Amino acid sequence: MEIAKRGGGIHASVRDLRDRTEDELYDLAVPRIRELASYGTTTLEIKSGYGLTVEDELKTLAVIGRLAESMPLRIVGTWLGAHEIPHEYRTSDSRRAEFLDLLIKEMLPRVVEQGAARFADVFCEPGVFTIDETRRILNASRAAGLGVKLHADELKPCGGAELAATLDAVSADHLAAISETGIAALARSGTVATLLPGTMLFLGKPKQAPARALIDAGAAVALATDFNPGTSPTVNFPLMLTLGVSQLRMSVAEVMTAATVNGAAALGLAGETGQIAPGFAADLSLFAIADVRELPYWYGTRLCVGSWKAGAPCHPYEAGSKLNARPPEILLPG
Image (cartoon, rainbow, N blue to C red; front, side, top):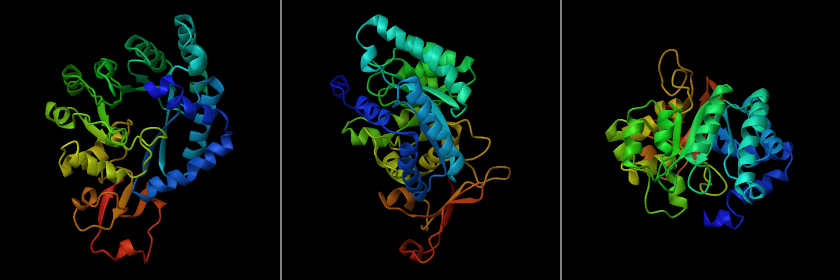
């Protein structure tokens, strides 16, 4: 928050994105997506949120739409226009209100018309968007036809998890500072708690999201990289499984569920992917391991030797690679 107040953090990324063309953004994204696939990811959510103007958010979402059509992974677009209050709207309460009106009355209809976003998301956090502002944006988004998500209770408890449960959001992300009331609310709801341990690790925070308490209460927990330029610059999804076991105190079975079935549910895809079962898409990743417990055990190591989305290659099998010299392989849902 201190960095953001000085014009860094999200604001620095916003300045960078605004200066880039759609083609530049696309060309930057392609190798990153290939890297994600090389670690076994087959389904990817990409959020906007670094434009914060109507045209720059639409530009970002246009790139996401192009990537979804051209890349082999399953890509879901999310509009995160409410990622931060731009500096030019922080000068007064009236200017802040103008930005909310811009989001709801101008940007949202254009986003829906464009069709690249499946969900709307809001960074609900003290110093960013309040509970009331978040509720207003997400209610408008749902009325316009988008599913809803929240960045909730990342740094301070503010009731974001409770709001996510009340709104029946598909997911509440982050949750490192969730309250006991928030845990109970998510446990009673259908909202998936998406935890992002790489972010807390990179920020040097001593406290991770309370995965154990969430699971024990009955909440559905998913894991994700939160791959972004400021707080989690990693494409290594299996590393999140390592952190899930070592930092969040989850079992291997729990992190595998969080990486597959619950990860699909956090994108509204639980009926299509996330399981190796009849009727589900053949979204698969092949790892050069003899036991599923090796996946989080070899932390930081790329063990994926092939991945497929609906049976089509995302990351081709690398015949003759050193990884393939390891004995029996295990096939897991991507």
